[in-house]
Image (cartoon, rainbow, N blue to C red; front, side, top):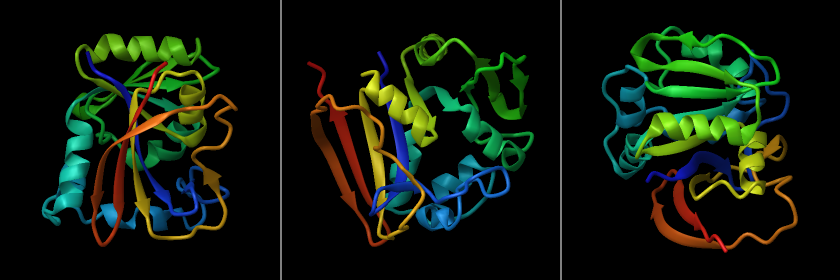
Amino acid sequence: MGVVTFDISISLDGYVAGPNDGPKVPLGENGERIHQWIYELASWREQHGLAGGKANSDSDVIGESSENVGAIVMGRRMYNNGERYWGDNPPFYKPVYVLTHEPKEKIVKEGGTTFYFSSEGIESALNQAKRDAGSKDVSIAGGANVIQQYIKAGLIDEFQVHIVPVLLGDGIRLFDFIGSKQIELEKTRVIDSPSVTHLKYRIIKK
């Protein structure tokens, strides 16, 4: 059985995007600072159809994070912000379930990505994604609000955060609005580099 996971970059002060995000500024104001470390990595460039790049421990982590993912869940806001930039061949190559309040016909893209629009709640979308993923993992891609909903519902098994040494000061925090219930974590891996610290955790289910 695969696990339900998320994998996301975060500033040292807890933000995953800057303020005022939208289709014209998908990562919010100054949000690009959180992701600068990833753009020159060989594994990230390969996922986006680009050649070259740096082959190092950071690249290995990014390559590993997607290799066992069989399906993805994301929010409609993330989809709306990213759609124009992903183009005809989005960098997912697998089924993507978009949480939405408005039902919509699926959209089939090149490279194996199909967007399904799920309007029956987070558990329904997850169950559909698990069906497609089979023995592989389901990744909750974001944004922060969607990840928060899955954490609060107790549906995340493990996650990885890439802590970037920047202080954004404002924007969208990852771990707001997850409820008051105590969540116990087991740290399963730490990989450090000059650019970023990769922390991997398992959520202890009681």
